[in-house]
Image (cartoon, rainbow, N blue to C red):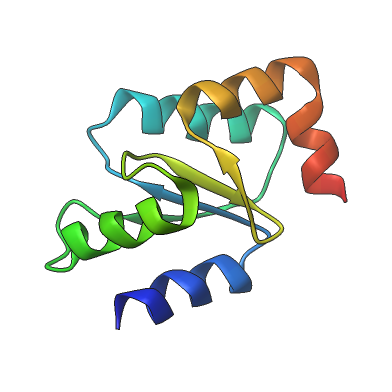
Length: 98
């Protein structure tokens, strides 16, 4: 079930990113995470048969179904702009270090 796949991915990884390889905001988020030296797991969802269901569940969790959806320590952090801003202002590294 999609809920289990998503919940387990979030629980098993300090930093979890739900992404699509061709999405510029996803690239922005992954670059931001790399810029702070974060170790993170990425689930690229565009070729999955359950992509729509994953995005529907991410909407339940975070209020939006767009990607990227970045989770830090089991909590929703943000999308591409939020993650990039967090890398720039130091908040992202602080949250990851918690």
